[in-house]
Image (cartoon, rainbow, N blue to C red; front, side, top):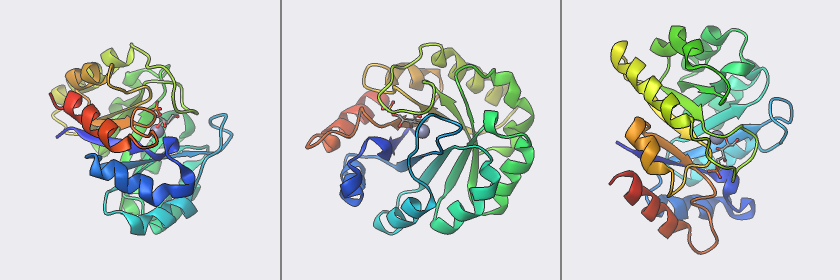
Length: 218
Ligand code: DX5
Ligand code: ZN
């Protein structure tokens, strides 16, 4: 099933609960939470307190994308705050196997993220441990950037590996996914679609989400 993980980075932070409800009415199925620390990426956003605040306002799963150094130290805090899925950047993890196990041990679904410059081959050893692989289709740090076209071949590569290795991890894609790029990533094998600026727009969020999903599921 093709899912829309709407990124609240593009939402109106003063009205987060309403923004989430509106995107959900439009058909969004996952809340994507972009956590940035000002070190791994040149931007700062939010952390466990915001996850804790939105936990009671929606039943949708909370998908936390950690763009932070040393994610291990914060994994229990995200679990306590109510996160359902945690994705860590391979580039930030010295002991990725241990980190993924740590996420699972804390009762969450574990995912791994690759920046556009990181070869897919780096992941082969941990693929059997993950619930999802997140392919960054922009360099992380900001919403509203342009989709990098090479991402399509990278998604197809991961879909091929999934078949060859007899696995069933999900393929998530994040960055510049919008009406004009979504068909190509779905065609390549992505089934968790992160979108922020393509969805959130004052007065239009619900219709944007519906149109996006119509294109994605066509
Ligand atoms: C970028 C974040 C993305 C971002 C996507 O570092 O990981 O989730 O919010 O935003 P759009 O959909 O606007 O590219
Ligand atoms: Zn993200």
